[in-house]
Length: 96
Image (cartoon, rainbow, N blue to C red; front, top):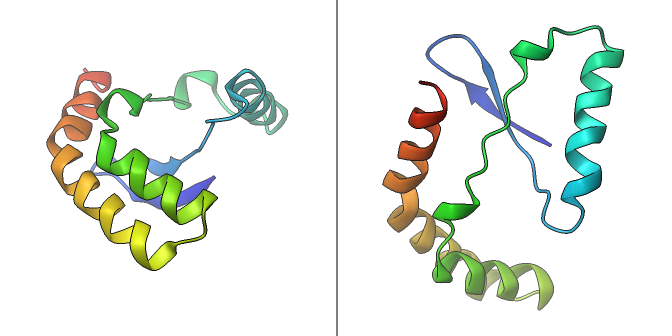
């Protein structure tokens, strides 16, 4: 879980990778949220996987699995820039 900043409404924004065990990660976060006695309505998960493109996948695989960070990271960045509007649209739709 990585803190990314605060949105224009004052909400803290985090990213969470759940690639390998989504059936464990999301319930664990929800349980911790409850254990901290937080309001369940204040926790929102937004799946941005539909915005992930082939450049992001190739770059991520190269960087993380193969350890080719200098090769893979620029590819991920290019893919992320191409996907930015789609990611933004997904998040905006979740806020409506």
